[in-house]
Length: 149
Ligand code: DQA
Image (cartoon, rainbow, N blue to C red; front, side, top):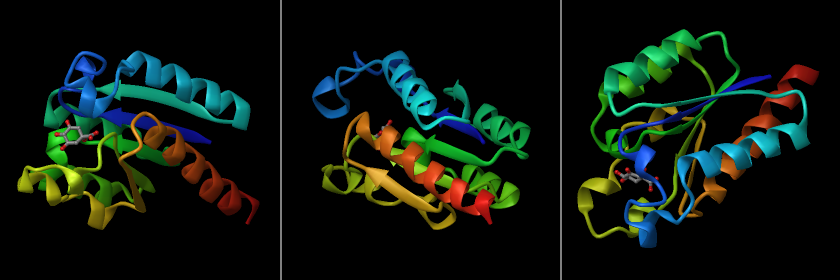
């Protein structure tokens, strides 16, 4: 089972960036937690990509179009990128949209819309780094059921 963990703009600054909102864990910390969870679940190959550039995120999705699932934190592109949404639709890869914060509880109304949610399998938000772990568990559960037929 191959799962891509894709992170968008500014998430390379996690741990330093508004930690009261996003937490004190760095992206490397979160990746290590996911790697460990993947090992516990077993049979999972993970690839981690972070980019601050919309086109690079789209290219990454295309490059993984034969993969089984995506854990995606599109960051601010969630609220603006129709192209990222189209990449998910085009490849039909089951994708879980992830956010560290509960974007609906944030004061900026522009965060309340997601172009990604309509094309994702589901959304996990508001649980800090745990959102990523839950997304991995959920994808694993779905994909193992599908593989067992
Ligand atoms: C975020 C929420 C977005 O609104 C914001 O632009 C981010 C991070 C989150 O994980 O809570 O960069 O996706």
